[in-house]
Length: 91
Image (cartoon, rainbow, N blue to C red):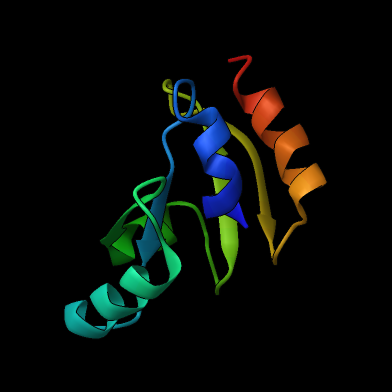
């Protein structure tokens, strides 16, 4: 859902999916299935530790000044995501 909504926020928000607990090749294959050009991705265990991410799916909204605006586990619907992204876009 984030990938679908992200296209409406491309000018104000950068979207990055950070995978972990896997190898590069299967991660790349899964990213190809799930993501469009709206969301960049990478494989980096340190980001999980930095933000205390215990499992997937998890999301963290961070300003350009590294301030955590919001975080959550699980999948959100389009309306709730838009509310969160609208808030982030004000920073």
